[in-house]
Structures are given as structure tokens and as C-alpha cells.
Image 1 (spheres, one colour):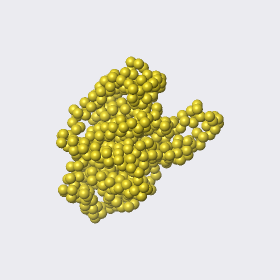
Image 2 (cartoon, helix red, strand yellow):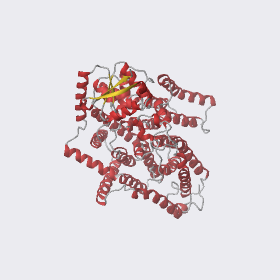
Image 3 (cartoon, one colour):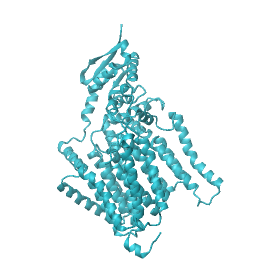
Length: 626
């Protein structure tokens, strides 16, 4: 590496931001981008062959053309990052023509312009007056957070600040959250009903992870309403934000960047989520942010400590989709660390240490296989095999900003971050988190997994600041990035401010009150006119069964998780034969169920009839042919 004073004067950030390396990575990104653009029509052409047999609530997804973005990009991203890493290693010495400062500036402006164009034309920004108000508030917040980071506080004052942050996170989460979705909550509550009924794992459908399901089991034991469950999830999310803050302040060398990271995290991961962070429980921190405690474990104990192995194994047991991928990544990096040539240990000792650390994950995998009959998520495989809902990734998607930035981040962390294995782990987590977006590629899902990308970005800014002898230019760069990120979501900020204003003006803070009154009335009617054997056919049957005390029956929990019309029709007929009353709620589901029953061959030896009941209820009965 040439490092003369002359070059330093020409390019002050040369040791950190080498133009030649950046241009190589940018060129690689353009190759990756245009290859995807060329092959995209071929990738996204699969059709769901099961459409005629799907239940009506799946048909809204089956109409979309599906593709293979998930497997192709899930494998392609690590290959792309690996090639970028190798190229920058091979071309460590500056290439004279590429190391030209003015060429770098010109090229960077061009890349920035391509990305900025999408946001300006898409109307992401709001009117100038509101824009300036938000800009002013953000600038003041950044200044306050900068001063706070430079001030030394006593232990008591730190505790007071932590409690204040926790209360602030809870308040914001409560104010900006919409009414809890009984449909989405039922995907957590229905499996929780099954667990409370004593049914064995693997004998029922469980869409999401074990950790979230058991959290809802606890909610049920506390007899919480759905809105109270939402409030509890807000409290859990607030604790998780404190964990984010703890990890950032330990991993980052400078508290300023940790504070600015938390501000951007609050804006992107909390405020910008359409219905708030917990109105849809499947996007909560208990599912999409399980990497955060693992980063703390690796920072605190390292890869070769037994507690790190236990932590990754526990996360795998908590979530057999993301946890399994995290565990595989951990074992891969662990193997590289232990067998790195510079480690002066005997081969037998290395194998012994690796075996000791692998033993706990093997026990976890064996236990999971015993409980569920598989080492990964059965529900996840079922969804993937349907080939429905896989949206195309647009050529102006925000994903391409992430794809552009990750090789640069990988390079910065490798060259200047002292804990290189942790840097590789973070980049690996980013690739894994992207699988959530590849599986359902709408832009909002990037917000749901934004925590890891923001963490990597501000860690890189922190590393650059440290590597450049804490030059104020690094602070200006961090402030600029913070303002740019927050202003990008200024429209969402304005929407949430209006939502809070409407809540205060209308006084409607308990949005689920009317729904609870309806449930009480329906429960009273059903208890008066029917036996305890009632099968509720509803988009909220998980919650209704929990509130009314009815059994959650059938393999699919909730009912709307059932996939095929012929299996659903047969299940309903069998349940009626067992003495169950088949009750549909709400009215909108009446026609959907009728479609299922009328389309099936099961109706050739009989027919279903419907009887309208009070309170929006409908009863269906199967009448065999005489």
C-alpha cells in the first residue's frame, strides 16, 4: 500500500476510502444489477399450478406471477459479496487510473443520482414547509444527542436516562400503533390454543416461531384482551430497543454514532411501519430482530466461548427459520476461526474445541427433530412449495441501495474494524435477513428488517471516524447520513403525527372496545343456543376460540391457514358428523365458505345449506342426499 504524504494531501481519506477499491466494488454492483435486470423476466415467470384447488383467501396471492427470487438471490448475495471481498484483496495496491480523485467524485455523483432520482419522482418527500420543520427538529435532535454522548454521567443519571428512554419508546409505540389485527394475531393465538389444549408439536400447523407462540400462551394465561396483548408487545419492543441501545454503545467506539443510530432506528423501524411496530405481530422483534442478543454475546464472549454456542442454539429453538440460518452462519465462521492458519494449536486440540462447541447445537437440532419431526420450519416449507406471493423485485427498489452498500461495508469492516469475525457475522446476518424480503418483495418488508442495515451503516461510520483520527469530517458525514435517512421518511413521520392528533381529538385510545363488546354478545348467544362443540369458521378464530373457551380443532391453526378446498370441505363434513355446529363469522366469510363447498366433489352426495343468525353469524349444515 502506497502511503506517502503526497498522496495523503491529494486524497485525505485515502487509507479509509480508497477510490480504486470503491470503483471496483461499484463496477461489480453494476454488473450484478444489470445481470438481474436481464434475467429478471426469466426468474419471475413461475405460475402456481394449484390455483383451482386453493381456498379463496389464498387466491388473492395466487393471481400474481411467482418466481425464484428467494433461492437465487439468497445464494447470489453471499457470492456477490464474496467476489467483492476477493477483488479488493487481490487489488490492494492502488490502480493509477482508478485512483484518480476526480474520477471517483464524478462516478460517485452518478451513482448517487441514479438512486436519488427514484425517491424524488416517487413522491417520497412532502411539501417544503413541513420538510423544513422536520429538518430543523432533526438537526436539533442530532445536536442534543451529540452533546449527550460527550457528557459524562453518574451511574444514577444513566439509570434515569434508561428509564426515560424506555418510557419514551412505550409512549411512541402506543400512540402510533393502529388497532391490533385479530386476523394476524390469530396466527399466534391459534397455535397457543393448541399448546394449552395439550396437543403435541407437529400435530398442528404453527406459522410463526416457538418463542412468539409461547409469549401468547402467557398472554392467554393472563386473560388479556387483544388490545392489552398489543400493549404488552409494545413493552417487549421497548425493552428490545434498550437492548439495541446497549449493543450499539458497546460495539461502537463512539456514543455519538450509537445515539444517531438509535434515532434513525426509531424513525425507520418504529415510526415508518404502516400500522406501528406491533399491530401485526409477525413483524415484531421476537421474530425479525433475534440477531441483536447474539451480537452482544459475540462481542462479550467471542465465538469460541460456550455461552455463544448456547445462545445461538437457544435462538434456533426459539425460531427454526432464522435461528437455523443464524446457527449455520455461526458454525461456519467458528470453523474458519479455529482452523485459521495463524492459530498455533495442534490439530487434535482444534478438533476437540470445535467438537465441544458443536455439541450443544447438535443437541438442539436433535431435540427439535424429536419435537417437530424436522430440523427446520414445516410451515415455511409448506409456504415456499405453494409458489404464491413471491413478488418481483423492482429495478428501482430500495433493495438496490442495500446491495450497493453491503460490499462497501464489508470492505470497511474488514480493513478497519478490530473485531473482524464480528464484522463478518454482521454482514452474514444482513444476507440472512434479506431472505425475508426475497420471500415477499414489497418495499415495506425492508423496513421490518432495517435494524441490521442501520446497525452496519453506523458501525461503518464509527469505524471510519476512528480510523481517520476522529476528524470532524466523520461527524459531519454521520450527521448528514442521519438527516438523509430520517428525511427520506418524512411523509411517514407526518402521517404518524396526524394519527396521534386524531387520537387526541377523538379520544379513541381503546380502539378494540367495540370488537370486545361484539365478542361478548356473540359468546352469550352461542352459549345459550348451542352446545360446547362449536367450530368457528372465521378470520379471527384463534382469538374467538380463546375468548369464548371453544376448542381449536383441526390441523390448521388458525382455520384460514387451511390451503386446499377439498380438504377443507371434507374437514367440515367430518366435524359436523362428530356433532359440531359450524358457525361462520363475520358475514363476509359466508360467500367464501360457500365457494369452497360448491366447488368440491364432496357435494355430489349431499349439499350444504346456510342459515342466517343474529349478530352477523351464519350456520352451515351438510345435508346428505336421500
